[in-house]
Length: 545
Image 1 (cartoon, rainbow, N blue to C red):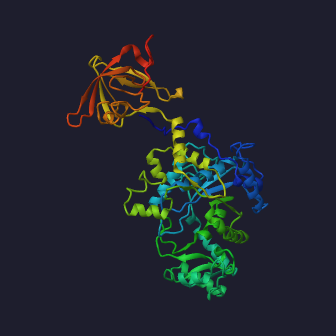
Image 2: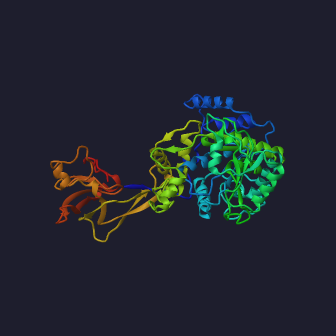
Image 3: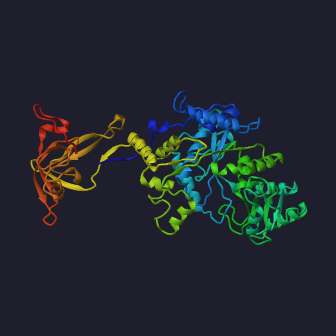
């Protein structure tokens, strides 16, 4: 059995040559910035033409970006540190980084940001695992060029990675997000509410019925400011108050019906400690953090499409207030779904907590750390994501496609070795005792630059049990004393070539007295057949094991 052993230090030309096809997102960015992407697959006139046409249709229905576009083109990967990354995240990581590199002419870069707005579910263990997984999946990819402002900053060990600059956290912007909330209150666009969660659901309405305004919606600006500052100071218990945006309770989009933007949580935060006891909701913090760190294109999966009006509503108001100096744009694409594979973080946590698996990095888990323990190289994950492409259509992908990508990458970059799963001892009776002979074997059948390895050959070798068909054993009896049709490996009365070495024949079978199973084969080797040679006048041995 030949096993592929992946190189960890280098990537082959094939591995580094992966590329996404042009898609509606790269077309949108190109159209709105005037900067052309580089390094995408050439699909002109090929099967990708329809995909490009679909992309043009998407652009036609997409709003134009702000004419005052300010570069550089910046994307981000913003996971919540409440679990380990899984294969679903792999697509988001790969695409965000790939888009930034495709727009190198626009100084493309990708930020790494942890969306740490919920201290109840977050943990430092998750932070470390997320950063390790992103470093792993991007291993071998070219780094982003850094400007002088970033280059002059000495990055800590945690901050170092394939992303641009340091690791960013939403908690870095808590003061800015708080100021944005104050600004909305002062504009009369946010209010402190004290409806319970159940009452809020009742007031919200349905997809066919408008919602009802909260009785606390029309508090005065002064009262709202006083209550919100009291929330900030820890004067109230959890659940007593929330801060809600004042938008439109009759909007057909439920996300625009006065969404909650702040809640009270008396819990220590893994980054800020006890500095805060109120925390922003994701829909509120997300556009502000994007704008604050200069993200130009916020690439999200399709479940956030209905959240985009709220994203724009928040971003426009903090921009108009002068709290940020640019407007990010959110664009959605389909998420990665795998057949028969659980990618729900909530369910994966349940598997870990209930000890159905040994941990997040159990090789049976679809987490990136679990996939890494299986031996899958990161280039294979990137190739898989790139082959799936980017679209607005949800799809359910067969897991075998990812395995095919792993085989393809490992076949190209991995040296070969021999291994036996079920060994059967072979003793060469006409071999000199104590003698060893070395054979030079190529490490890779197609890549001579990987060199050779040395395989020793002596009086005792081992072959795979399934490579020997025992005519007198249970399998032979069941088959009428005949070998299976097409069987060209080792038979009691036949010859076989040991790969890279000699042809041998079987003289005697030593069996286990209890099971009658072969435990050793006594064989003869033919010196003139060394290293693939067939003596003149003799038939070539077809079987090679």
